[in-house]
Image 1 (cartoon, rainbow, N blue to C red):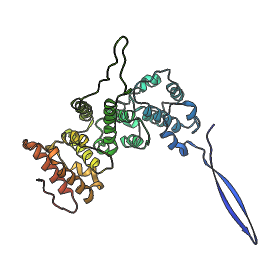
Image 2: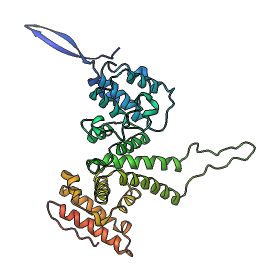
Image 3: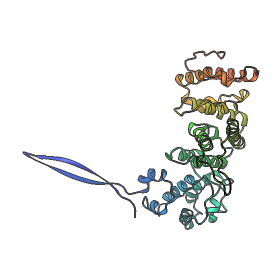
Image 4: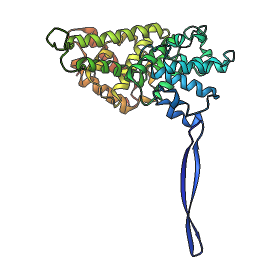
Length: 353
């Protein structure tokens, strides 16, 4: 059974001195292609509900169901007796994996989690981390990234883990600096960090914990120093993933990603604070600033965006720069001069403020 959605239009028909109203009904949605948006934003945790949005004879529909299930549930390991694991495993069981298009449809869905071999033992011979990337998708990394940025509602951990998995799958791909430097990626990272920090600061339950035979005790919360250390640990892990994944020259591409994250974040509507900005800023290597940054940011390098970016750095120089450290001052100047040079209107912003 496939859901059919309808719409009706009413018309006023006039004929001479008489008029009457008529109504025509149209079928709007009867296919997977029309219902794709409905699938993308669902949690994909109920096989019965998913059967309503398309035909299971449609290979792309199967792929989309598996893909959205693996992405939305990428918070940890699900048991093989999980109803959705079994349902999606059955979808794969009879597909002809000797056909390239079929392999691409199925393996492109599996690229978002390293749990797929456990969920689907019939795919044990297909290692998405080592097989040629044309076996995963004919559109490369951009298609996988677009899938993640297209999801409107998703758990922060699931999205973050899916980005990391894709980064590992497409390790050393030339497009990584261009696609992983974009705003949705850094927002995903910050949302992941901030959601966990919030849960630590505001633990549940908020009441005292009662132990058997003992008086109730207050639940432990983290100090500011511990929270900063936690943020640093997460960013260190991401930094290590990037070092392993970005193509050569590694330092140039890594610095380009951090600079672009900073630029995109400052020019966004995301409610960031200096606690988000500083860990990114400190990782910029002033000796690895290159024109790769200009190529990545492209059309975003408008006079308005550059002005906003430089003004922010100048307004917050005291928090970003250690005046007793020459290299810290040198980095600040290098970034200002770089974006002064990118400014199409060539309005000079003095680095010393």
